[in-house]
Image (cartoon, rainbow, N blue to C red; front, side):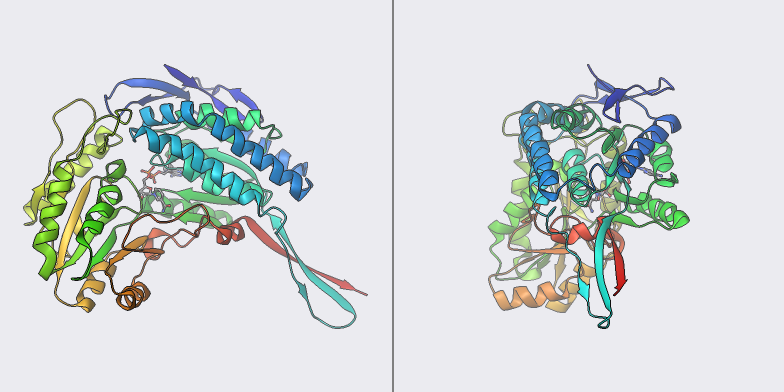
Length: 477
Ligand code: NAD
């Protein structure tokens, strides 16, 4: 059984309350570990450690080349623990083992990528008049708080942390209560082995409504990055507004792919396999809806149903597994309720539609045909392996249906006609649009939402702006 502590000021420490959070394996429901649950005392210690590190200027005064070298050491240490850390992440999250190992590799990629920006944080010189030299400096905020979701504990953490660190901020990370183990153990080990000075990166474990809200309300936190649900995102924005500090928010989605009559339907099926059934659909930018032209609807639905029914079901560490469990009993019940509501509203489950009768929290790969745009299963984020198929007759209707939800995270277009593709892309209200594929991004591509999916951008060069403030300097000659 894995037992983990909080990592504060370079030390692993227990919570003063003695409280722990138990963590289970979603494939069996059995307890596999516990973490020490941070209370106000540990939140204060972590923020104080970060503040001291910031005020010591250890990172700010480090030569950019040195900061880059330190970040590459973190990347190297993350790669060293990738296999072991990935195994633990696979067990606590339920995701397929190769994907869990890749999260550590992806985390390393973020540190490598952002290490390249440390010596490119350049300001401007601004012409004012002949007797003034005016220029801008880009400076870190200070203590940056990162609140992480359970679905990608390592890669979501690294995508914001590496960027904040490259910009010179000190950080406090709150892990997700359902999946804290790999972060609290293998990630903190990598940070320590890389020689990161004490206090620059602190990791606490705890519940969102306790440690999470204590952290976002803390008087010494200067910037917040939150990845999670819309509901919690709004609470974070309230907390940030109370203290007038900036917040990065990356929220949920209900993304749609438009399928034109000329599309390669096998590409749509391949995209849906990873896009909605990968990680049991628990991906913010999942391909949750297919909006297909009526002339090819029956053929596509048949192919989708055949693919969904044939997926190999099992725990994440089973070789070649394609459908893994949901994160918890609560999530499983939520997905069951959505599925029931779809059937009651008149949608037809042509594949799946119910929980799987075995240990753990498994739900069948489900394809709903005859979904209407106003149904709950067409509007709300299910966060499960449930694909809704909607039908259209003309292009304007397709675009209207695709855009007609509160979210705007991702979207897709399937067509062989490049003009049709680009015209449609221009009309999609989403932060990223994939053509003839799904999930094409990398650490270098900006990622974020439109509408309720959040307004921030993470990844790529764009993201660094969220972790820097601009100082204007005027020198009278
Ligand atoms: P969640 O909002 O329940 O929790 C996210 C994190 O916030 C957790 O660490 C939780 O402990 C913490 N939290 C909860 N209440 C809090 C509070 N009052 N104050 C501070 N912190 C609090 O989300 P989840 O269920 O962990 O994650 C799933 C959601 O995340 C989905 O909606 C998904 O779409 C979204 N998500 C978005 C992205 C993105 O990049 N846009 C990526 C991954 C997940």
